[in-house]
Image (cartoon, rainbow, N blue to C red; front, side):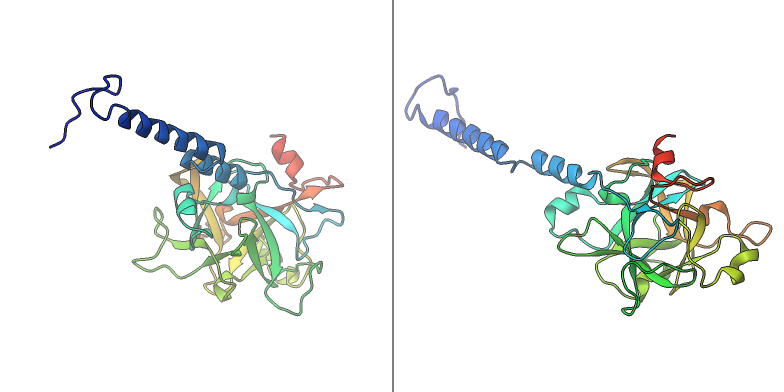
Length: 275
């Protein structure tokens, strides 16, 4: 067994070997630090990108259009639907490994992780067309660079479900399939039939229904989980009714944009950041 009985200051035998080795280690460290190759630097750069501020679409006509950039706000929990990207997984694999978890964050600032683009499921629909109640669409996260990430869900099984609630899991996937198709329905059941085919207003309550499983996007303060971004809420696809056979507030969402013209009762990015 080899044991060093002298420290590098005691110059015995190959007295400069340990000194040179330690100097080389220090040089490698400083070089990696300068080039941003240290794990700490990579993690910091990744978090800066994920939490980087983005601009949402400013509406002038008060309606949602295909191609708009929006944040999804849940009034009941005062939180934004967000991509829950693990920094360690993102660093070890490029592009971001899928499926990627989602959560609901109480950070109400538009960032890469909580902003989505509204894309049509039908190729005949053009960007800029108005989104209507009942029309199928997809939500694409702005985080995807090399690979596009779409909000998706699949029926819950014993092995695949939401971790805390055990309800139907919602994730971000890298393929635009029927699992990533959603539609907007009116949050008031009494107006649901009359609103079919009507334009979807921005900043108003609505329900996001998953086309394949007919379950509504939901979140709840009862299911809190620890993430790299702090305590956040679990997101699932689960329709829950109150005593009046109407969806509970956990199923209510709002497409939040910027606003050129403030309107009464409309949720905008400006009045959320003012809270």
